[in-house]
Image 1: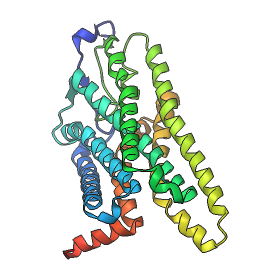
Image 2: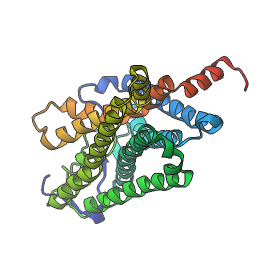
Image 3: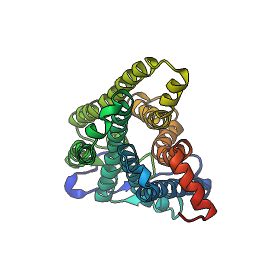
Image 4: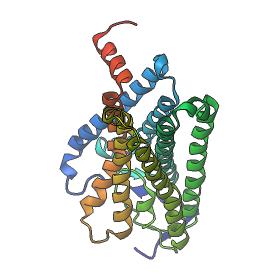
Length: 314
């Protein structure tokens, strides 16, 4: 069986899996994941609607928040088709091209989220450390350029991944560890030399996630230094409070991402369920919690949501 190979022209199909050991509870798992999908889609759609309708939110910070919501919707819709097919309809086969397309979009939005969090940290840095120049440094045209730059970078680093995988021969049994296609999972299936794939994968992780996280930390070091120079304790707390939402979102995104990367590369002896659960947390929790966090911590969004819930007009 191991001697039978599919090359790129053979376009092998892949078999998706749910949660090992919970084969009899797949419908319950879909109810759980479906709830996360609903919260994520409705929450992020509400954020976009509120930012569009509320004139006081037409500021760079909320433009970046809107971009984050669009990105989270992209993550949710990228995984939804195969998760629905696997857990609800027991359809586990996915074609090579479909798998490559899903992998592209999942990783595109993942890298894009890292870039969005970076520009949001820059927004906080300018607002706190250079408040007098905030409107000039973050003009609408510059916000658009930064957003396009984040998207272009994500496209450029992810685009080679399907091409590098397509050149490799695959073994006959191509069983994935998840209900969706991820590069760290797919990279273990080819029977050929994956050295180039590993090197390129490590390079893009370090040049995006690694660089972004370092710059975010650096921006907060500068912010903290500026805040500590404020004489009033009340003003210091008020200023830091404007960063709480962003810090929470950063931690919710990067902690599971680091866990996924570490277990994929060095977790050979880690229980299988860990390899399955961590990507679920990484892909499902941030899109669900991001709108919740900003709705709770942002007074304008919270007020607008309250008005919508009680049905008042304004």
